[in-house]
Length: 498
Image (cartoon, rainbow, N blue to C red; front, side, top):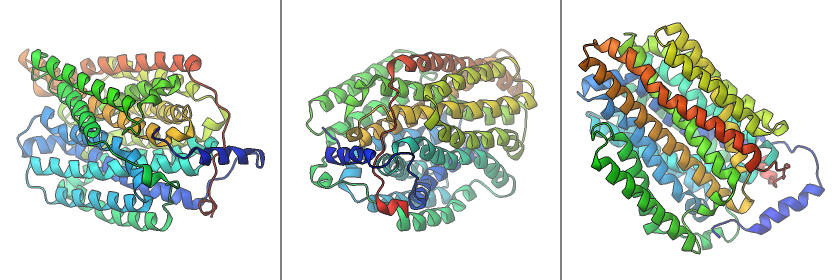
């Protein structure tokens, strides 16, 4: 139901007896994946660059941290709403046509951001960019699932992580340089040449992943799409406005209503012959655990990445560039660790990495809580935090997807990418709420602005430390409730081996 032609999977498994050992991944496939990953990279680059510019944007547009965070939260929210339609798009449209649409839409958003003259226009630009990424992001995962051997999935997802994790390394420094010598508009101008590179690489290498008969069977349920959009948007709104609503009846009304709408969405999908997203992927315990772990990990990483630039600039009084350089080593280490861990997965049970990662992340969260008054301690702790976050994210995504049969590839990819973006949006919204409220409480108690942020940061980190502990517990449960599947080689077409 809502799956690919099972004959393709049977043919791939039949070929296993004819060829043993690891199958190499063709250079053409690697370039195709990188061309799509560049779009995700650029989305993250603009996000992390703007993070450094948040203080400036708050002053220029006379807005608070709880408002400016919608540049990140809104982007991730629309991304999480767009992704559920990806199983339909992957089956209905030619892969290259989807790639072109992603580049064109993302470029339109970039141009809108470059010429933005107020906050609503800038926010609109980020939302348009999210629509482009909403097409490209699940397309990357689907191409890997369809064209790469199963035992090489970790390495391929590691390549994607290398490209996308490089953005947090480059973004803050790039944003700092731009803010030091130019202005934030140049964050968008500079993206345009890289969009051209992505387009040229992709047009030459992106493979077709539709199977025979997929286009005729592809359908989309507009009511389902509206339900999931309203439900996910409601969750983000509830979290984002918790502080300003003082947790009163408005918060609970929106939260309960959102949960009811999402429950109706699930019920509708279970009754449909061809659902928008096959929610039965959650019937696989290993996949469900993997998604909960992804919420804890992605929410923690995005939350911390929102908090630290504000702490360094408003608490320690650092310039945008100096704050970016302080965080650069951690971002670089995070970018390097992801592909290294991904390559090691073929020889080790992924939950081992996940447990280790969460344990160390919890220790670093404790360091942020107890010793956050020293810039050097923050820089080192952030580097360790990002390195071991790589122990969680890539193994978790790889292991969760490997729990599903081939016919659920597109649905598993859509669910995973939606959960990841939703977790990032919630993590950012929670971080914004915490730092804003705790800083305001400190100011009300007589503290200066700088001291208020220095004290609010460790208070905010208690929530993220709790998330890391819960993630570690879930990772331990993986040993019992997930399967140690032997590598099932999927057929790599001849063109991908060129």
